[in-house]
Image 1 (spheres, one colour):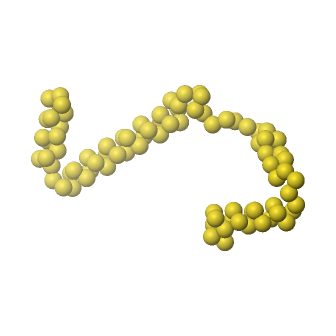
Image 2 (image 1 turned 90 degrees about the horizontal axis):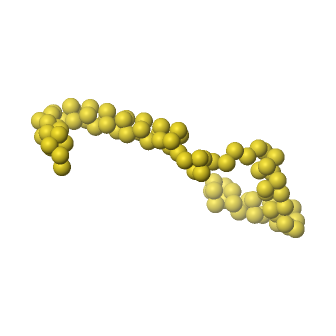
Image 3 (image 1 turned 60 degrees about the vertical axis):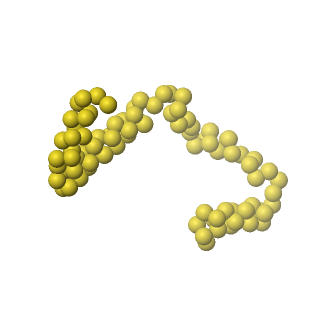
Length: 87
């Protein structure tokens, strides 16, 4: 551990509980901001979510139900709703 970091830890031990929480809140906010900026702006383009039009999405899922009847599809949807929402 470098001397600056050792000094910071020493100084943190000198703070009151309330002051430590203030430091903690500040550091957490800094970390959140840096992660958010990284996630949104610095993500490599290969990790960017694909920008598909509604037509592309529809085309990619077209025929997903294969040759099932409406009753079979309704049963599958009801089953999935039960799993997802407890309906």
